[in-house]
Length: 354
Image (tube, rainbow, N blue to C red):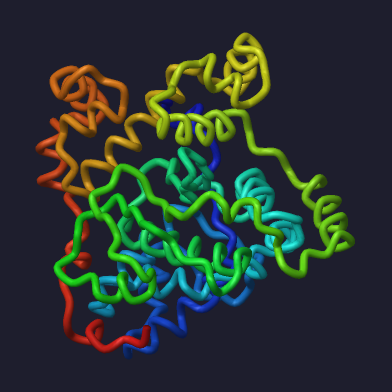
């Protein structure tokens, strides 16, 4: 694990459609200003879609907003306002790519221009596609609300690219099952699988070959020229993003990461050394963050958590987690278990407008 001297700069989140957060909170007769202030963010930041805030602050805001509004699925409401146009130039790039599969691939490659704390992914296996996102920034709270927001956002993006007849066949959410998930089922058109090990919507892979209606080659070329001028993530961020996706396929070696980044393993090690860290330190950071997420936001059995992280059983995982955090996984779950707002309904939250 890296110390403060070698820690990377905070991951940032572009505001985009989160300009709607303040009005959404006010719909519940709650003042959003104290919520933003407690997260360390100026309310004026939400006036500009191109403004940026720390990614961890976004999680705090969604968590606090869900608690204050007594709306257990506040993240779902916050995510459903997002559309491709809210991604700025990345949205223009995606919207004008010829096919759905290519469009989602471009979104995965360039999404860091909007969000540096989570990485999208697209997996195709046995005729089905999983379009999802994985959080890799460390110490993020409000995971349940973030996952809900991402699921709603992914639904909107897929509908825009595929057309009105598209629908998912399954939805996976890596957080505890709420007592009432009526709003999820209504918006998603399926009953989601909670306590999943990943966050994604699943649909038939034939949609990936579908042409994107209205894609404009001229606008695509313009967007490609613009994103090519944007900054490339640091090698630590690149390695962290790659690792987080590789964990989905039980891959986590330095060679796997180097291959994903199209570089030699020695080059990867050298570039990480130049930024004051090692591959093992990055691996530990990503592994601990994933472990923390699975333990704190879901009821997934510790044996399954250990297996998803590449451990032979719960015992070696428990020893490693205790060294990382100073407490056992069981103690961590008891102290930092899933957000209580996920398990409450009623009050203002029972009457919101889905």
